Image 1 (cartoon, rainbow, N blue to C red):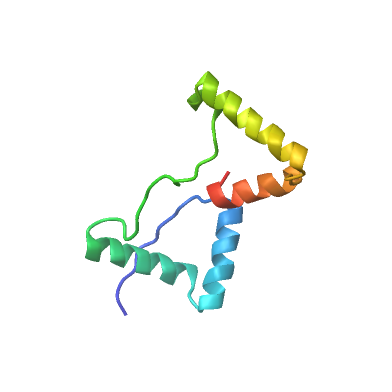
Image 2 (image 1 turned 60 degrees about the vertical axis):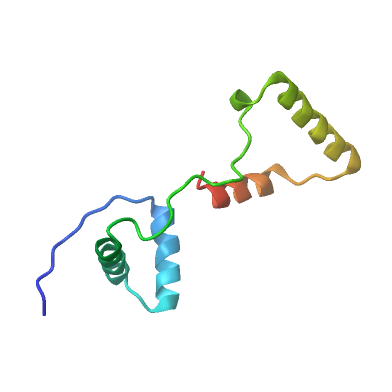
Amino acid sequence: MAKTANIFARVEPEVKEQAEKVLEQLGISMSNAIDIFLRQVVLQRGIPFDVKLPQNKPLSVVDLSDEQFNAEIEKGMADLSSGNVAPAEKVFNRMSKDYGL
């Protein structure tokens, strides 16, 4: 058996737990998953997947002009008037999932 080296990494507990659940379903240990990742880094001479910002990032008030801000407020008011609403908890849970917030 080849020699091994230890790697110590800090990750958020929730991310670790979620990853362990997925890896368990795949029948792969965390150590094997990390080994696979590192081998792919070597083979591809870089990160083996795209690393980029999400295309549909949440709006930020600081990025909007006054006209854009007013247009977003108008869209929100129209949604509210038409009953096109969702509980805040559902929205924030979705944002946390989609954007890692």
